[in-house]
Length: 97
Image (cartoon, rainbow, N blue to C red; front, side, top):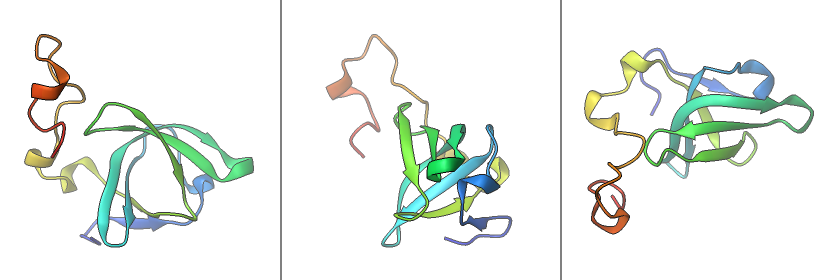
């Protein structure tokens, strides 16, 4: 979980739009993506989740947040943001995994 080049983020004040993060809970990766907005007054920020393509609200008090560089994320883990539009969502590979 703490690979080289990855650093824990304690507050959204440490982040800027465009930073890449991973959000962990109980040793499991819940979200990975790019920061798209921060609200320092509430210590919350949103990311664009790489796996689902959806915006996710991240709370630094509820999740272990790690800063991640793109080079540290294996190519196999970099899934397309959304399945192709011609494939029904329930048949798209990787949506439920």
